[in-house]
Image 1: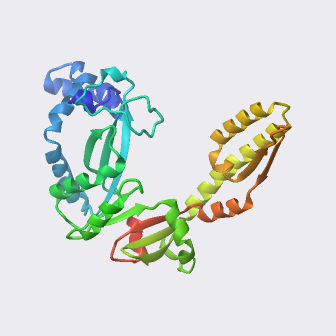
Image 2: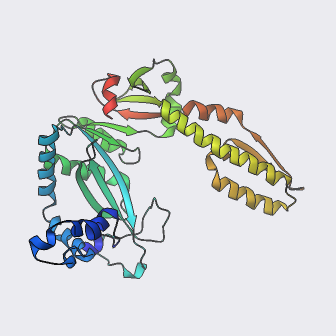
Image 3: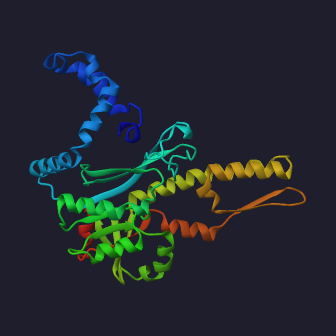
Length: 328
């Protein structure tokens, strides 16, 4: 019901419908009503009426999109997000979906909902599910994939996902399905460490302007090591900005006449503000004098520079032509 699936927050598109669109349209004359027709709670109440026709609406919109733009829907982008409710825990119903769980918004005190969404690369939503707030990301893919296949058929598609969404078991199921379901998914950082030496010998291939890839086949997967010139510039600029601030802050802390405990607290605050740059620093506070010494770890810096703007993906497409990767 609406009280379990829709937060009572009037976001921008609904505000425009509520305040602007209705006044600028002829809806009042056509429906012989007043501004109350577009009142916020009336709009939310419509959600319950539309929910019964959710699958039919998605099917209709997908067919219209296919006819108008000759879309194929052979690449699907799948992601998980969440929203929270700023309410007292005693207000929660036992059979509702609002639950305490992992949150990306740093509000563990608030109950939340998990929202799973699959869209086409051009932004058309193909399906969504509202799940209990304590649902783990890796528990959503199997049921959602079955729902998409039931609604749109088992056509050959490529699922693009973050590394936390699929498990090894679900990826194996996708490879073994008939027809095989292709995927492109992020990999854990430790995977790049394990394959780094093998990737050194592979040639760079141009996927599109500014993006190059190395392809490495191993076991059942095709690993795609990609580097983006724009992303390298962006990540290095972010690191340098953090590093410039942190180095100046460490110099100030070293010159301060404070106790050891106070210096440690200030170092903790600096760590929280610049965590990426902090990983490149060797800092030590003397136990007796409280003096601060610090230096740049050049070995870690070289490793960070090698990986900036570069990322490793796991895939199982049968075609290893890198120009095909531009659609991902």
